[in-house]
Length: 398
Image (tube, rainbow, N blue to C red; front, side):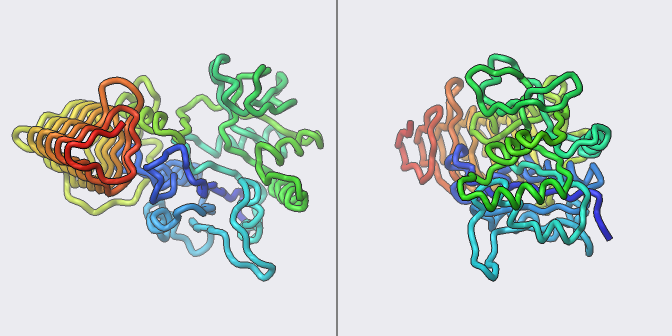
């Protein structure tokens, strides 16, 4: 039995721009919005769009991500035929190789896709926060009789040179692709979400793999090759919420936008488009008698006895009496002890911020930590600091 469309999620990147946060985990497994991981968004979009066959290409620090995905049950993807599959590089008869680029990651999994004989393949990114109906995108692709379609968003012209841009005609047919140009001809930024006719994608992947000079990349190789062959290529304009959370600043900003859904458009309480996740199995959160909580997301298992304002707390976070959390993202299992102040920062999983320590500042760049570190008593972690290891008592980190 064939599937109309198979989804492939590229989730193997190192996430180097997230620095300490991805020291021990893959970027798609990083916490977001309290109860979620980044990978929950493309998977949930697939489920909500009636796509029930999903391949996840993993490579860098895959253990936590693989464990989180499991058999796909939280997303109703524990299927006998289809479902969700984690796809790391593997040993083949003619040897093995790491994924050398985005196109090569899909090329190495041609056999997986062929099992389902799809008509279309959608390529997704595992490091974006986006709520998108891929069924609408597929309908556009069919109506245009396209061989390749890319989701795009209009960006301010002054920022256009930061993006890969699609130049289109009046019918949204793509006439040119510009990769971060100095002089942009368009403000239609590629979202890195593609739909291909499978026969076309397979042909170009095989040709690309045979080219010893190729970077094996969709943006640098596959798309330019499609253009040079004058294939039927169209840009699908998307106007919903989309954010690349590949930097510390953008990840913090996206979490803050969750707290203001009216203006940001990121509404996690939308009953018509549920974002599914794995349940940590913790009790309800508890707010003590002396707690003060304002405009914050507090997840299961949290114990709040201090002050939490305009912040996002993942499961099992403890904020002791006298501790203050402002404009911060605190990930699972972290303890903020009495007298500590954390603000405008991201603190990773299972950290301890000891008594009277300070992390972050009211202004400046966003400070962040690796998972499992301890910030010593009365230590000071300044704005923009990257904390990879324990900070000693009274130490200052810039």
